[in-house]
Length: 319
Length: 253
Image (cartoon, rainbow over all chains, first blue to last red; front, side):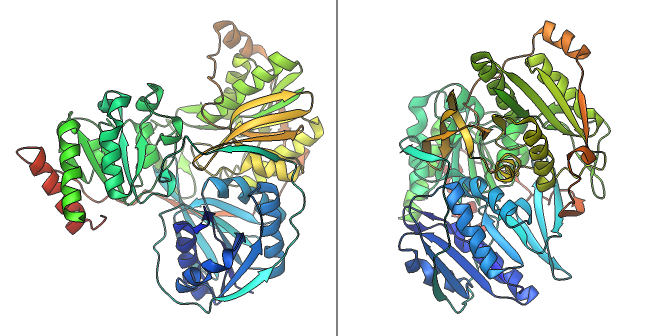
């Protein structure tokens, strides 16, 4: 079979955007290789999300009822579905969760895997996957030569295209097996309101914000835009904000549509984490700061004056 | 306690990369240990200091990776093993994991620890693949680790926060920033590291896995949308221009 299996991801009972992104990408691949798009959703009450995936190209939505996420049992479920469906191509999200379980899936399916893919084409019936390497200083194209080709896909890298699939829902009950890891507790108090790695807009602050008391200035802009709050290493190492907000080499790699860098000079390690952002706005007092070399729109000015003015202007136009 | 630490040698972030047909031009590249692997080395040494045993630093690649192993020695590793792969496909995580799993199995390791990702390929695959190949539990993105006997308690970063888990050794972990503060190699460590032996394993020793990945080609990054500095008299004028550009030109907001 030349089917494409995509594994959706949910957060707080809602379908994540990456699920629609990889379904759209899967649809294009399936149309090229002459197969169907099979989407897999694992969780509780997940069948209600089937129409959303059908609208972006899923022919079949397989639902598996399951409790709390655990990498071992989850990878067993995905691998069992792969075994039953025997797809040519499997697309998984390159999210925190995807990075946690996808390596196990690849081993169980005896399949080659290319991770953190941002683009796809098809050559001779095989997928050619493109991914940034060396902090985005080069791009590499790969083929996977095992019968099953697995790819993890970077959030925000795939366009969502409306193309209706059949959307037939099938329930399955694969064996979950046992997990050797027991989850004792989960603490979600320290994270940002909008997930950084999947946000389409990020407002980020660096040394130029001068102290933790000034985050509300950026947070207000972020809230106005429905954006995630990011930070440079300088701001994290100064203790102004938790590491979960850090963008860059020892933080998160992000690819939003719009990255607004406030008071960030743009060290190469920071650029490594956000350089693939589609549009970059830099607001910085120092006109020679390296961030201006990558910025689509640069404002040489005082962020304490410019950012509130930008927030006010957006509030005006966004109503 | 036998601890295997995975050390990957990568180009320094500040090094410029020249793209060749199927690999990069290595002339003039400064090589470093991938930053997250430094957290892994540090954690391995701390475990040894607390529980005894040995830390085995393992690196896969051509001869130059021995330099990374010398640094691991200088930080305090007890043994260093070079898995020598000359025709190295640095992107094939399956192969890398199979070779490391084969080595770890022969050593009967209690703990296998590596960085959460390498900064050259950002795949986040190898350590967890090793765990799967060995049928042992894993903890990805560990920010805290306590081991008592065979009992493992760890805190890992998850989306939006942290999670505390319990499992048992043998276990594989990926180190996230925050797990520890890596030490600098001491001068004495650097001097003695030069004389210490580095064991070599060939792919034949470890099972010669067949690559499932093929590099079709490398290319330079796509050109960026050309940028410009906005010109305005005051903050309000800047704001008006920026909002107009983002909404009407870029159409991203």
